[in-house]
Amino acid sequence: MKPLALPLRTARKLHLAAQGLLTAPPRKTSYAAMLATIRRMSLLQIDAIHVVARSPYLVLFSRLGAYTEHWLDEALVAGDLFEYWAHEACFIPSDDYKLLRHKMHEPDTLGWKYNRQWMVQHADEVTDLLAYIEKNGPVRAADFTTTVAHNPGWWAWKPHKRHLENLFTAGEVMVVERRNFQRVYDLRTRVLPTWDDKQHMLSKDTAVAQMLRNSAQSLGIFRPDWLKDYYRLKHAPVKMMVAQWLAEGTVTEVMVEHLGTLYLHRDLLPLLETPLKATHTAILSPFDPLVWDRRRALELFNFDYRLECYTPQAKRKYGYFVLPILHQGALKARLDAKMVRKEKVLQIKNIWFEADVKITASLINDLRHTITRFASWQGAERVMLGKAPDVLRAEWGYEWEIASTQAS
Image 1: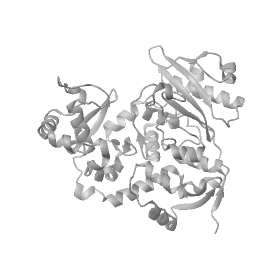
Image 2: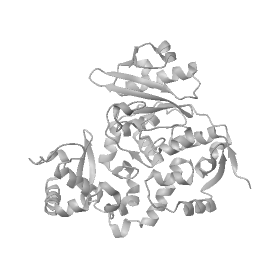
Image 3: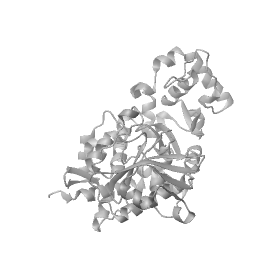
Image 4: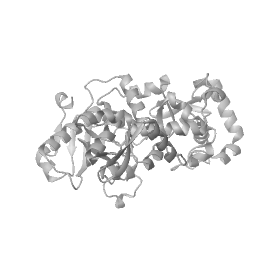
């Protein structure tokens, strides 16, 4: 039997459906819905850049609307989530701790995230630190003073911060909360007192197989070479797993316009019974799962995207922290914005449309409404427009106030 043929726009909608970005969120949401959203994505990447709302909060806002932000912090404290290295540093559903535990036993495989030489060289200090935590309770790196010889700078962490980061990667300490987004660490044995490696830990092969299954479900539709990037798996039996899923009926082979053979997860098959409609407009984080694999974003959405915050200013094409804009099933624009919190103003430094986008009155109205909601959620009372296409300037002017009725 020939594989099902799908238009590219349908493949995009299926991927958005899997990611929770196909349709606009309901007006009201809940703590349980937030957890379900994270489970749907499998991973929620963490980044501390604060030009606008920090990435994990923005990723959730894109899917949930104006939720209660401290729910994410509460989920970490409650143990519904844990932090570890997955795609990068991520919040992960606690049920999936077993998938990452084997990495903690092989921290050397995680590159710069673990330095065995440092741990050997400072073994006595590390032992004393663990004893201090056991006696005094959770700590932050900021709780410890630096040394006279410490030379501050990028990655020039003070010794206790390096100890804690290495212990975190080795699974000896866990993040139990964040204060002002700073990690607070406690002993793993205190956080997970009933965990027993011999009883609960999965083998590496079993864990990798489940991470690939999670990736396939969270992507919804995929090329096999997109799977490994989701959890940053260097060596994974992708071909073998896809063949097994085909035999089980977990995935179906489909032929996608312009892309060729892709695989569709069975959870999405019911969506093909009626025409799919993409109704959502959202501002995305650069670390959103939809775009964190830049090659996938280019292949599936024809969206050539790079994060330029680490690029020298003179060499940037767009801006420091440019946000993709999703509109009704396609990535149609980019936004360079900054939240000026003291003045309660969202500054739009620039906004760009993609080359092939048809600019309609509906698109312009949806963008303004989406930007207004985005600004209001962050506490802004006004939006100021800097550079922008003439068609937006003509409609929006140079600034607008945010009324409570506009923000809803």
